[in-house]
Amino acid sequence: MLDAHGYAVPDAASPFAPFSFERRDPRPNDVVIAISHCGVCHSDLHTARSEWGGTVYPCVPGHEIVGHVTEVGSEVTGFKPGDTVGVGCMVDSCKHCDACNQGLEQYCENGFTGTYNGPAQETGGNTYGGYSDTIVVREDFVLRVTHPENQLAAVAPLLCAGITTWSPLRHWKVGPGMKVGIVGIGGLGHMGIKLARALGAEVVAFTTSPDKKADAIALGAHEVVVSREKAEMKAHRGTFDFILNTVAAPHDLDPFLLLLKRDGTLCLVGVPAEPHPSPSVANLIFKRRSLAGSLIGGIAETQEMLDFCAEHQIVSDIEPIAIQDIDQAYERMLKSDVKYRFVIDMDSLQPGG
Ligand code: NAP
Ligand code: ZN
Image (tube, rainbow, N blue to C red; front, top):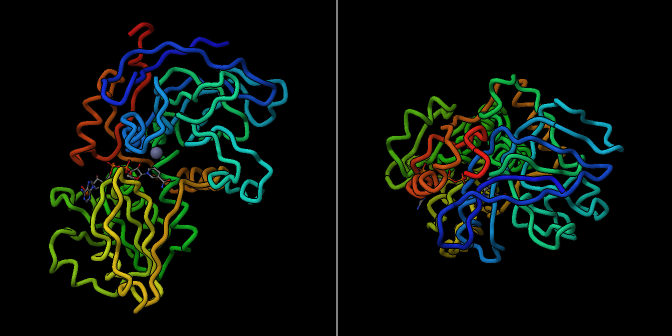
């Protein structure tokens, strides 16, 4: 087994603390990665605090991982020591169900293995994520990073925030001639704005934080609407082809459904701890609107997104933090005070503390 060091929460109510554990010895198809940076996703917070239930402790979150390969198993053909790589929300899946065969491992019919809080066959316990110095991952779930090395920290959030917004934008064929809304300018939302703009859509950002207006334009939005201002919302009624809602808290969906054209879709990616109030059926049926959801993205699609971002020089806007500051980062995330993703610099992780 390989020695690993990271930060874990011991239960739903305690702060993070240094945590030493073991990673499996690499199997023939495994890649060993020295983690240089890990993004901080709101899902990490939901899981660390067991807001969705089912968290096994100790819990080491983190699924926006970038770093360098240090070792590969004997059957690995796609990676070699020194390669710059990423790992997202999944580290394994069955690879033989219909979903996996279609490259949709996130919808694996036998359940994918989450990068953290997923079942770890080798120990009988749970997987530990990227708030740590090293990880061992099956080759099929390792992504190639081609951005310049000095952008690595800002690439990390692409592994979840990037793919979670890219996948629905691609599925609903967002492109030129479409008017697209992005709701919530946080980690996911700010990537949604950048990607929808790069795909050629007309982009409107929706925020509850008026102080983010200038930033939203700089990120690529053509227009910004403060969603709590009824008149601003009304001006856009019935005009959107597609709206992506990234908000992490329960809220009324009807004001957004009303913004859709006939046949438009409101896609939810935020997963609040408590449900949204049920939306009005009338708003759906009178214009044949759809309310949909989307989960991260498949591995091939994640590689496609990373390559697109490298080609279009897209990275995340980040605030680097030391791992010792993770509890404080969570508190700021709860106040929507993130511009626009915290990324842990793993150099801050000292052995034993
Ligand atoms: P985040 O950085 O905290 O951003 C969420 C944003 O939502 C905030 O910045 C804020 O934007 C807005 N917001 C927060 N509270 C609000 C409220 N009470 N009412 C209205 N807007 C509010 O979170 P994130 O990392 O982007 O994650 C967002 C959600 O997506 C989380 O629930 C996370 O678990 C989920 N997620 C889902 C998937 C998936 O596969 N579907 C993948 C990753 C994450 P403004 O200040 O602009 O209003
Ligand atoms: Zn995430």
